[in-house]
Length: 128
Image (cartoon, rainbow, N blue to C red; front, side, top):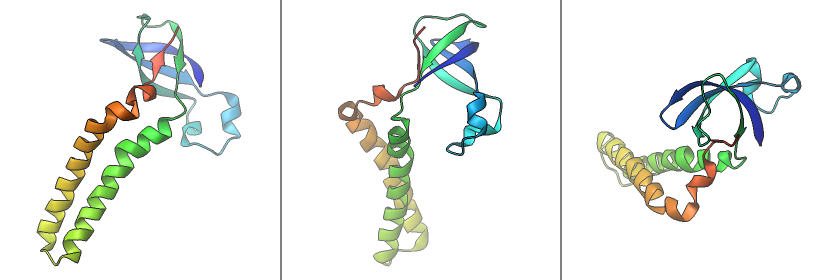
């Protein structure tokens, strides 16, 4: 999806961009972004747009998969490892520690396998 916004601030090769929410969003109930008149996003600024310039931003629609990958899987690992610790009659404190270690391990596993998942496809970019 391509959106049009204005560069608010540049931070290295990243930019904070303000995108106006269209009037059609007022009637939509599909996302929570329609509560404000604008939203702020961080995007990679390849064309080096200056502050105050109007830009086109490419938002990959597979961002839901990326959210699932980086948030839901570690949460499942946390719950699963805590549950495994409780199932094995390990002290609750140690089960919690095992769960946290399992969650951190899932982050490392995602990082290890991210080259096969092509995580770069989920980066928000300024294209013009």
